Length: 92
Image 1 (cartoon, one colour):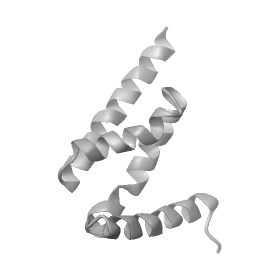
Image 2 (cartoon, one colour):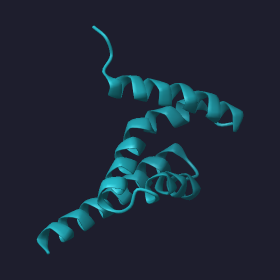
Image 3 (tube, helix red, strand yellow):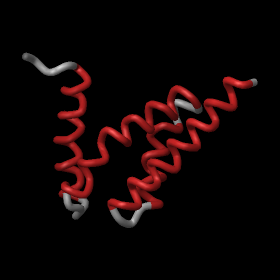
Image 4 (tube, rainbow, N blue to C red):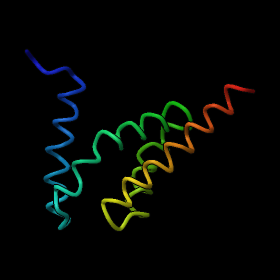
């Protein structure tokens, strides 16, 4: 069975993040577990807030996070913010 285009995109992202994290002196095992969550967050930002804000949101998550646990927590915070905003917009 061949991979779906989403699976292939995640695999390509995974490969790039391993290479990029190594170049930046980060442990790839601290980076790659967050791929799907960051992609989901940037998708939600792009569709519910602003396309240009999507990659910048990932940048903000990185700036605000000093540990892999903080990355996870910050993704959850921003996902909750997007979901709350999306629900408010639907109620209007």
